[in-house]
Amino acid sequence: MAQAGQTVGLLGGSFDPAHAGHAHITREAIKRFGLDFVWWLVSPGNPLKERGPAPMAARMTRARAVMDHPKVRVTDLETQLGTRYTAETLRALRARYPTVNFVWLMGADNLASFHKWQDWRWIMENVAIGVLARPGDRISARRSVAAQAYAHARLPGVASQLLAREGAPRWCYINLPLSDASSSEIRASGAWTSG
Image (cartoon, rainbow, N blue to C red; front, side, top):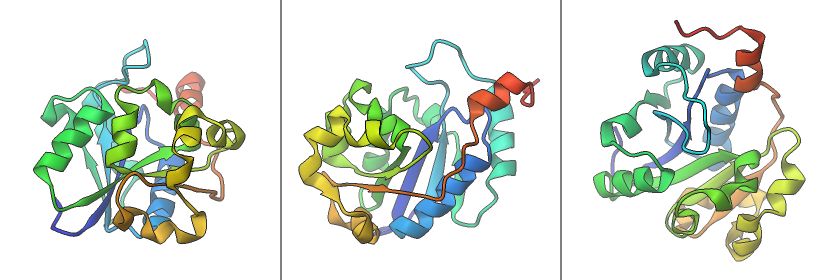
């Protein structure tokens, strides 16, 4: 799926369901970080959440309908690789594609709790991270444990195009025109039925 020297953004999540906000941050990430591709990693489940997601087939179908873009691949790579945690997935992808420059993409809300992720320091040390601002999470993200611990590795937003090529540890926080779409709200409204 990728060739030597390409830059590939990785956007992981349950996508339960995928929505316009996911598509928006993906298009912005391609543009702002100069990515060749973005792979959506539709996860089997989030280890930090108690409730399991809708069936994989339903989530994949919805994700492909929401994100139709020539530079985006909707994948079930974590299921194929048998990985559960982000660090495991990243290790497996780096082994499979050693000449690809990966960028882990996350919303600012995830940066705020990133220090709770398994092997989060390994992730910071080994994969560039692109942080995309979302409504209400800007201050908590910038003051987070991970942001403070890796303040020295922060790339200014004006240099975001360099993120994938600079090598880890390196992260960049960019402000976006915001979308307040939320999978939780879509589920709560009854607008998402997977059956």
